[in-house]
Image (cartoon, rainbow, N blue to C red; front, side, top):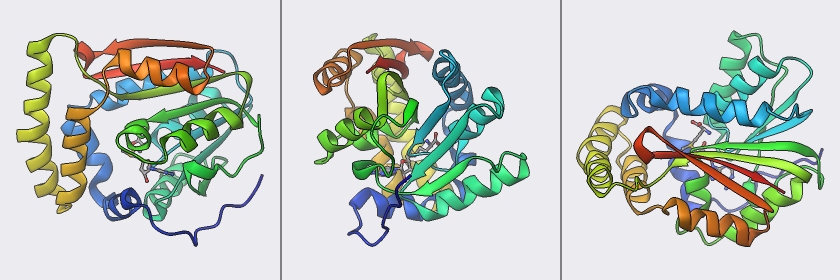
Length: 241
Ligand SMILES: C[S@@+](CC[C@H](N)C(=O)[O-])C[C@H]1O[C@@H](n2cnc3c(N)ncnc32)[C@H](O)[C@@H]1O
């Protein structure tokens, strides 16, 4: 395993995610009406489906996906979590200690230079960070090629992310909820206006499932499948390298 340097220039999103942590988990639950945990649970089922030995949770944040993978997968699965927000990682480590899951390796690093060897992972999961990597992000191609690089051939990439409902009425309601509920409530309760403005804006403008499928196929995945969740406000992606 390679070490990742933290001496690089800050990316704009890094500032946002370094500021947000203390109430992050609580706000995730509240703003999704506790659906987020169920969405992660579905992602974990797909991640563990083919009995992977080594799994990376990319953009692990406070570790919710990694913790679930380690708990469900047991000791035979080597679980790593990577993030470029140190406060988020601190919370992840604290939660892991409390749950007796401190075998999970939480590591500081950038998705544009994932500090692992080529083909190291059997599966790579990402929960609610894929939008950050692909929505108007100039480094999208780097992120995608890094994800592919660290996966072994035949390995699985599983993403759970906000999406766009097909139904126009539901889509409008989802956008209104983001604009008039998620943004003001998140800003108020966290004191981090920028973070929740970004969340609402990027979720409203994020790709439709068909567009995202195109991006993933173009990046080089051989198979890309998705399932819409909760009317399509989120989607679960299962891709094969
Ligand atoms: C919306 S949070 C999701 C966190 C967590 N996966 C979850 O399910 O709650 C996005 C996370 O991705 C991380 N992130 C965004 N861009 C990143 C990058 N280029 N490299 C590493 N981490 C990144 C952020 O620091 C943040 O912790």
